[in-house]
Every structure is written in C-alpha cells, then in structure tokens.
Length: 490
Image 1 (cartoon, rainbow, N blue to C red):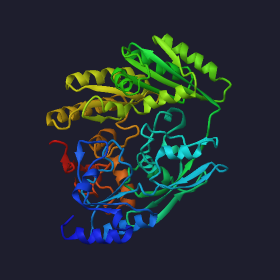
Image 2: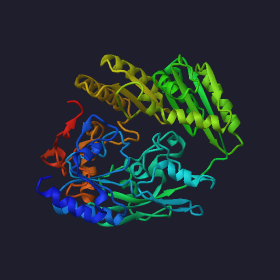
Image 3: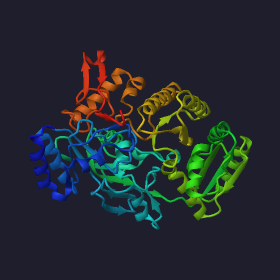
C-alpha cells in the first residue's frame, strides 16, 4: 500500500469502527504477521475490528475504493498461513463479533457470529441435551468463523463429521461489499450447494459474518479407554482392526512417545513414559450395547499387542484424558522454541507405513518429530521441532515437511485433513489436482472474487491474485508462485 493511501484509509476505517477499532502502528501490526504457521510472515498495513456485518461490508468497500487487498482473520490459531496478509493491506479481525444470537432446540440449530470461540457454544448448550459436534483440539481458542473457513475437524470427526456437515447456512460479505445469505435454518436448500462451497474455501470466496450451525443430541452414554503400546505399528494396526470389526468409535486418537513425555510433564496424568504409543478410544450412543463395544475393543487392543488397556472410571477421569489430548500441542512448547505442525491424510491401513516413513524422514533431515494422529480417519499431525532463529534448521524442516506430505499423496491421501492449504501448501495443489481441476476451482473463485483482493495468494496456485503469474491457455498454464514477503530468520 502506498504511503499516500494509508493515512486516508486509516482515517476512513476509524470513521466506520471508531478510533479503538483500528491498529496502524507497526508495533501493534507485528502481532498479526502470522498465524500458527510461523515460517511465513508478513505484516498487514492496517488491522480493523468490526462489530457488525454492515461494518465488515463498509470496510470491504473502502479497501476496494483504495485498491488494496483485504483478508479476514479469527483467533489466528490456523496452522497453514490461511490468514497471512501476503500482500499487506487490510486485515479484518472478526473477534469482536462474538454473539450467540439464537439457540433453537426445537429446530436444532444455533445462530452464531464468526468470533464465537468454539467451546463457548457448548458451554452455552450445557444442560440442554444438545451440543455442537465439531471439536478441534484448539476449541478453547479457535473461532467458529475460522472453523468454517478451514472446514475444521477434530477428535470426534470420525463419527460426527467435519464442520461442513454441521453448517446449515451462512451470512457473508462478498468481495464487492454486498451482504448475502446462503442457506439458513432449514435442513435442505434449493439450488447449488453454495454453503458447501464457502465452507472450507479459506476465506477466498466471501467473509462469513454469521452461521447457522446444526445442534446434535447428546449421546446417552460413552465409554473411554486408553490403550498402551510398546510399538507404534501395534497401535496403528489396532485402528484398522477396530474399524474392520464394524465398530465406529466417536473418537480414535493416537499419541507417540514424544508427545506422551510432553503431556506427562505438563499434566502428570500418569502415562507410562516408556510406552511407544497410546490410543485414546471413545464409543458413545445409547447405553444398550456400549459395554459390548467396549469389551470388543479391549479384546482387539490386546490381540494387537496392547500391554494395558485402561478405562476412564468416571466423568472426571474422562475429561482429564481429553484435556491431555486437546492440550497436547500446547505441551509441545516444552520441547522446542518453535514447531511446525503438518496435516496430512492417508488411508487408515497406511498408518503403520506413514509412521515408519515419518521416523525415517526425521532421521534423514536430523529433525525431531513427535506425532499425534486423528488416527480413526487417517489424519496425521507430525510435529516438527526446531528453532526458527536458525535458518539451516528451517530449511531442513521445510524439506522434511515436503517429503512427508509427498508420501501422503503417494499413499493415496491428501496434504490436508483440516488445516487447509493456506500459503503453506499451495505448491502441493498441482500434485493432487490436474490443471483442469484447478482451473475449475479458479473459475468458481473468480465468480465470487473477480478482482482477487480478498485473501490473495491463498489456497489456489492461480492468477487473479497478487504475487501469482500465469501464462497461456487454461490447459497450458505455467503457474509460478511468488512466495510471501518474509520468512522467519531468513
């Protein structure tokens, strides 16, 4: 943004949201230079905090008037650079839009603003007999608007599905400043599934300012178990055995020894530190049959080599187990100054293979890697530990990350299960999709976002955004990505 444009834009933005709703000092802007993906960084030119949908629309119109890019942001817990302001410009932070506008139990939906923290909705629903099912591990901090943008999953995705399965409709501000509603409180809408298109589009089609989300009946009961293994392969094989037996757990999570040590040091749960892996398994539903499922799962765990299977004795112990799992990423902060969390997916039967390959790749690049998996749906989260102040370590982490994700593709999987593509994984898109596939996705984005000012350089390696070049006809495109501004320590 030119030095001449910025002061006028800042003044006009203050006219929309007030003096306290705009940040323009560099010391304040640095806070917003990255999300949980710390390797790519770039400061916005100005950060603005709207409180209403109309204010979001007015901000978008001002950005268009001055010809500058704009990008939405929630709590900044995303892990692939999805809210990185690649070309600078205006960052629209939606955390002041935090109202739960309606809870309708008879029709089983809630209306929430995008800045509502995921866990707040279930706190509001406590005692009603209903809950909001998507539960990312960061649910104590991440916002539902961010969950919609990245189509977040979580430990209970295996049985209940990802965010898109629980969003009935959205209100959104289009890149030209119009406010539209797509879908709504009813279960089925006529026409194309534009809700499905917007959910998971990583803020590249529109800025979601309200969401109608489905509420799910609480299960009658649940059984939570912890399998302890001396081998990651044995733990991985147990997962396929359980699914193969026709049991669909509500959650099936795996943590390896590196994570175990960090979690144990943080929470003192009593995990055996010499175990190579643990499985956290939960089944839920009507009470009748839960004991039988539990007994069958314990039998399968022992058949596959579990040396011990613990059961949560009561609700308090169950909550502690889940606390350990969901705060595992925070505990990793004890292990290194920086870490990079990868997000790949493989067929469940390939989990033993990808676990071995991750170990081999870590050794090849001398990068310590610890693992936590949403194992039931094949979603892996290898966590690469490093010090971002050391450029050589960063280069090895990037190389190891690339090799891990390439292996996911080779296994028939994907490079994202729930974190999105962001800026981190644009280079993988042409490995997963044909040029025609990408062209079709680009055409959809151009229909919503023809000027490319909304969230440029995200998700698709195509034109229509700053920093991207494209030559030739659609089927002859030579796509060149120009990386964002600043890397950590490089």
